[in-house]
Image 1 (tube, rainbow, N blue to C red):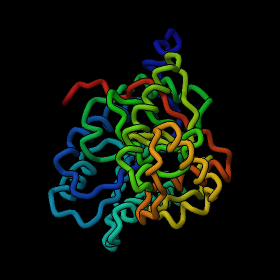
Image 2: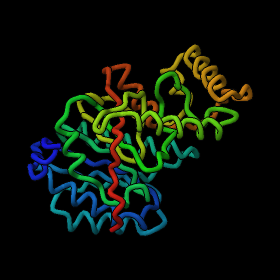
Image 3: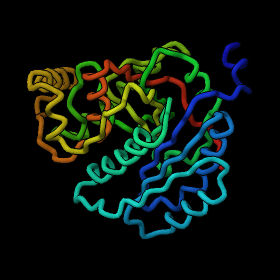
Image 4: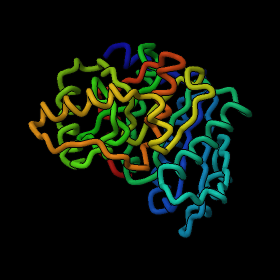
Length: 286
């Protein structure tokens, strides 16, 4: 904790980009902007990249106003042709535009991927973020919550099939939610949990480890990174632990876009995907 106190007032001399894929999030943006403003105060070089598409609320207006008044660089991109019928494909497309901007026009050390909805309207613990930026035991870092909600982006241990890819998917979701909370609770205070994929609405990445990696929201693409044998091991383990022989794998077409991004980086660059047991959100509303 002493080390955490010592870095509290030190600006980090790194290039940081916050990446947001946005669609009809106007009701949340002002509170998220406040979080971004607070975060920006702690870095010498700070960028915000917002890719938005086909909004029918006041999102575009708020983004343009934010760009005009910000003291740091805000880059906006209107992804007009993002019209896939699959939500995960649309999100992956916008996230990939953020990555294209980072790799082609900016020299970024860390990029933050941030959901622009209600999950990020509570005040962020900036000191906690700075603490972990000064450690070197992770390449992708996400955080715990009072209620761990993002099971779709989660893979760990022998669970190598996404939670909605089962015919009895809600039972799998309920089990994994309890299981990951139990595992995080067993960690020491600032210890990190080693996993294959996690997001939970906010994650930090060492950009060089993820260069040339891209998101994909289709199960077809993800299947190339997990073997049939691994899927069967996952199925059998869940059946045994949950004592439910009715659980079976299905071919759900959509797939959480984070899974392909994380597993690609593990396969190509031995990326260290970690979860902090600490909660990022101070539960203070703006």
